Length: 158
Ligand code: NI
Image (cartoon, rainbow, N blue to C red; front, side, top):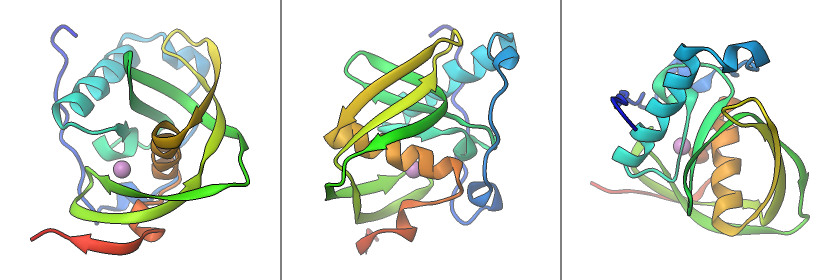
């Protein structure tokens, strides 16, 4: 997008990454500042080659995440998992805020997630596999949780 800024990413340990993020008010969504933030987060995620990015990672404790999809970056405002499969699966994860560390995390295979889009419209999506994993990882960020809190077989690249 035009003139989007690449934002610096906070690295663990940083207390902002451990704070619970607050809900975004509907009337904030339409502001220029907020729309700009959505663009900048999407651009930052692409530039850093992340599968997702949560606002605390760029220093804002608000419930906003960007997720990479086949149709490009999608911003999810106040995302909430409203249904999840009993079945879980282990998969590899990493995080831009925990560089060079990888581990395996158990996540729900399928979820239904509800959020507001950039226009403030309520969206409900069903996701499975990698997309479900990314959404769960990003929502954890909004609650101050990092994947290393849950991972097994943690490996550090040196
Ligand atoms: Ni992450």
